[in-house]
Length: 305
Image 1 (cartoon, rainbow, N blue to C red):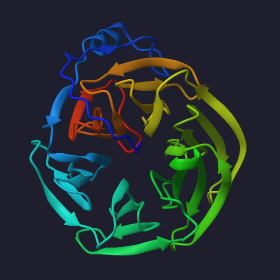
Image 2 (tube, rainbow, N blue to C red):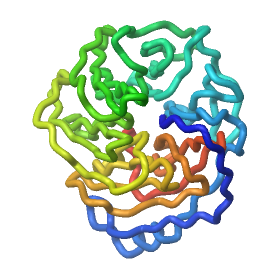
Image 3 (cartoon, one colour):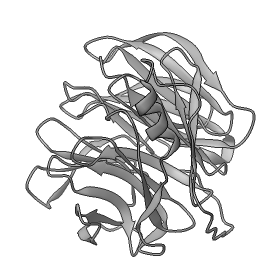
């Protein structure tokens, strides 16, 4: 999530610019398909508030995002694109990033309550999974296959941030305290790399990741000259899809840090992305300002497909 006040409503035709191929070279047919991709509106403008974020897809193909119609809610979008209220969060809580574990428990970053909330599988009951008053405002979350969570934790006023690990029993561990404005966060498909970006500083960092969620060997993956960075996801080849807030695009970056191509969007302010669809090749994008969700077909399935 990136906080801003102005309102723009844009209605461009959308063309996806495909440059270099993904991690593995694409055959000519696949390359042509990439060049022909166009994003479309999936959930109409104004369905969600300007704080629309999340997003995450469950095993049944339903898409979830925060702030449906009003702040402090979660909306559900079915496979036909019909949006409805899923749950209302406890009083005072406002959600941001959402992730599912392998058992389909849902975890929600509650940035106003300094919490990670949990909605147990096949229920709509919300509980506090983890709380730490030293969190600024947990923003985006990532998850390892073993259920270990990571949370970005920005302080927007000071352009700084923290990085947390949340173990499977809800115990919190501060991994770094003096970062830039931490925002998007993701785990590689092999669970050996953690990616964290800094919105204001426009940098994406990577760490070696142990099986228990310990981090080491921090190094810069890629930096950008303009526009903010927001939510991120990996595909099953390890390419990173980064919401470029203000640029109106998704940057697709190889594990080695090379910019592969950019996906141009209808709106200018993407906040986050998630893979879904029957084959995992539909990328959903939450759009601040417009309160909408766009989607685009991509060539490689997401990490969980």
